[in-house]
Amino acid sequence: MSKNQSIGVFLSEEKIKSRVNELANQINKDFQNQEVVIVGVLNGSFIFCADLVRALKIPATIEFVSLSSYEGTESSGEVSFRMDVKQSLVGKNVIIVEDIVDTGLTITFLMKHMKLKNPKSLKLCSLLLKRARLKIEVPVDYLGFDIEDKFVIGYGLDFDGKYRELPYIGVYGE
Ligand code: IMP
Image (tube, rainbow, N blue to C red):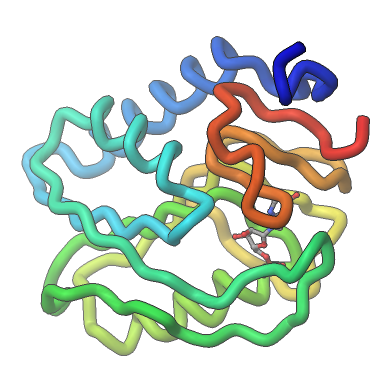
């Protein structure tokens, strides 16, 4: 029996792939003839980011940042930086790529920090959003799926470091 056999499909591989391509097409259109800096938020967005950048047709450089994240399934609300971008973002078109916006505290912290770097434009692309859980308003420029309040795993998302390798998104415990 495979280790992940018991986890049901919430968003299938096909559904994710098609939505990621739609998001990339929108970005291609919005930044036609321009260059972008893609900033992936580790660890959760690494797979989404890899698929998204491969569907982009515009020139892009790719960076990653690392922030403190969840302990178990509840957000501590405390955010700190572990790793920042390595290039100057002054005058650049920056797109932050996140796996999921839950309370919105993590991304709000990051967007504020990135704004201080004086980019030409700053956009947020998130694969998932749990709108019902938001504690602060977060404008998501490119959103994959608006989902209900469930703890999801797979396609980069983890529970205690596990299940990131699942090719689809499932609900933990269902
Ligand atoms: P926020 O600060 O509450 O918006 O939390 C965002 C971060 O919490 C995400 O980048 C994920 O790392 C983690 N997170 C929130 N909800 C989930 C979930 O349902 N599954 C896995 N990780 C989650």
